Image (cartoon, rainbow, N blue to C red):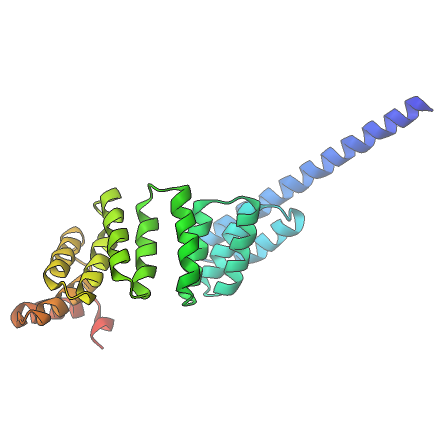
Length: 231
């Protein structure tokens, strides 16, 4: 009787191992398919596959992270935040905090976005993009000095970061530092001669300094590159 009990226990344990392995394999298959859909921009198909991953494995952190990204791309920011929050509970990562912060930003919840970006930076302080993202949020809050500090750090970490030069130019412009704004817009244009927003921003700064010819030339170039700026 004791031998039979041991045999049954071993068989039950083996069955659990086999079922777990099968579920894991199935979840991975769904996840691989979802990643392909996501990479090709087929976000709803990706979501459908990720729903299956989570059904099979409710603790699959990457599934929540990628599904949150898909909802974000579809503009469903509240749902994206729910998935990013679940992913953070399972495995806190700087990338996920930054994604949730971006979703809060898109919803206009700037004060809520800042702590997420703070945490992302705390976990990975050497990523230029994170400072750039937080700088954008500070800019939206009208906290231009803090924005400049973040854009400056972003540039220090990545001197080729065109957007941080442009965005710091915006902050300088709103503080009335038009010469510094022009300098940053010019740096952005040097890095990316097709960066329409930098031409447009520089045209506004030139206008403030009554340099009308330069202002017109930049405005014209901005419109050529992106007509939506001049509508």
